[in-house]
Image 1: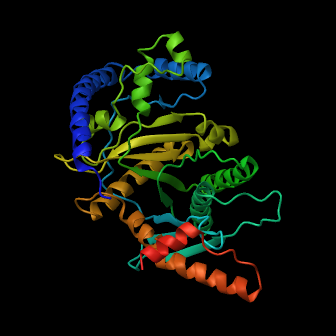
Image 2: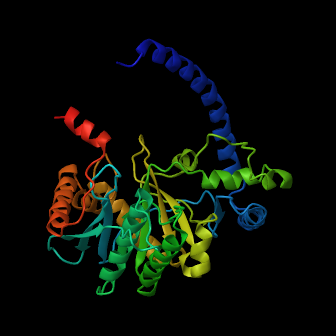
Image 3: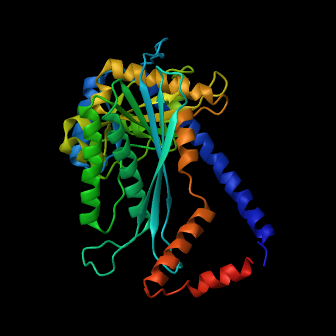
Length: 389
């Protein structure tokens, strides 16, 4: 039967009324947050101390911590970009389905490499990794979407670190999404092992003096807002996981879109969170940091959050190169600002449904040839397949 549109319309009307009421409150919170940002802009040491003490009381606190630049500081890109190697890796995957006759996953990583000192066309290649669990291994993990996503992130970083080893120019290595991996899996041993490999790949890049960065498009985080909010909380409120939200509904983009001109970046902040602490404990160089970048226009700001490790954040020449490269890459995409090289690597990596079907058919043929029992698709899937034909 079709949706009961009349009932849905009534619910939409009520939702619209509530949204309008909330919007008025959010507007007031935004004005207050922007005022705090400007008032506390130079209170770097006291804010850092406050964030540190709050994180000791509440280890699960997620917020920004000033690194040394004023909160309202803005930086324009350098006019010239020195020769460098630009790398980007993006992953796509086939997630396992218990409705398939054979449980499997696949990670497909697309890589783009551009040598800016040469006129040659960019190089591109793909790395495909099939993932099949071993049901006889008591230590084997149960295949699921989170595991495949973790292996995708690991593959992206590994391949970038491996390519960087052979480069003789400064390397800028980009991935889509945050550098922070905070998936919590039931298979703790498996997760810890792969997470350690991920950290080693980042450290390899650090030891090669490469620039690693994660590009987060349309960020909705409130890390800087949470820092400002700490100044409004009592010690007792901080102990309650900072649940009183005096600036609820405000995100960092609301603030930095007001102060960043097109092409400018914000101050750099350290990321305070339970998961990011593991990076710092592994090696101080890997402490996660971030800044905001306006890749839009005067009329249409478009903010991205860029995550970088501490070894990048602390070196001006690395920050200048990364900043200039990102602005240049986003300009290539015109009125849809996004790094061109990341867009291309995504196109290379994308796995389509027909490709999944082909891999499944190949698996079935091989298992049949080896006389391996195949359980067949689930009844639910069989009904769906029949309905759609």
